[in-house]
Every structure is written in structure tokens, then in C-alpha cells.
Length: 117
Image (cartoon, rainbow, N blue to C red; front, side, top):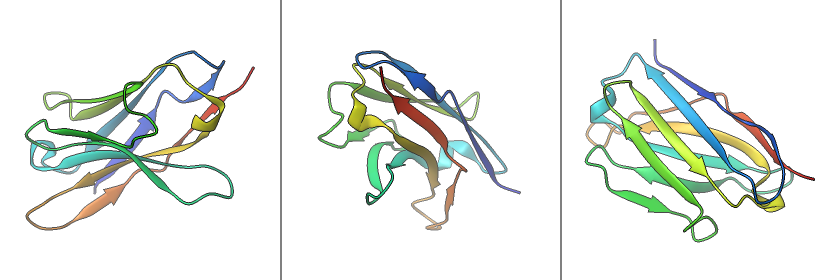
């Protein structure tokens, strides 16, 4: 059974930092590209960051220079380091795993990030 479990969300003040983690099980982690997507109330989902199994990264323009995605294949975990947070970063953040060969995709349950003073 595939599981993606996000953690690290919470309430932070504008300008602060948070690190999200996503622990994967039930997949060959190193074979999957990993990503983060967010959805704010009343808004469309937005892909935030992604990292391929080869370590190539990509970011949404809205987070470039503030967010960093990384992975630890030994721990089957992907991270999203978020800095200089803004109120508009408030959303539920979801982790995803995508296998480019089989086209299988899995999603976590999400973790809430709230940026507010």
C-alpha cells in the first residue's frame, strides 16, 4: 500500500520559515519524481515545486528564491524548505510521487500552512 505522509505544517508569521516533510512508503522512492502542490481556499491548485529522481528541480515563479525542494532517497523523504513566507502562501500543501515510466501518481493527504500575524 502506497502512503505519502506530509508533516511540518503550522502557523507562522510573515517572513518566517517552515520545512515540510513527506515520507513515502510502498514505492521504490528513487524511481519517482516528487512534487509539492498547494491549494488555497477558493483558488485553483498550484504546483509549487518538483524534483526528479535525478535531482533536477523546478519551481513556480511565485516561490522561486524562497522555497527549496530536496530529497533524501535513503529516508524515502522529500522536503520543502519555505522561507520569507507571505500571507499568500497560506494553503494546504500536498506531496506527490510520479513514476515517469509507469505514469503512476500518488498524493498525500496534505498539511495546512497558515501565514499570519
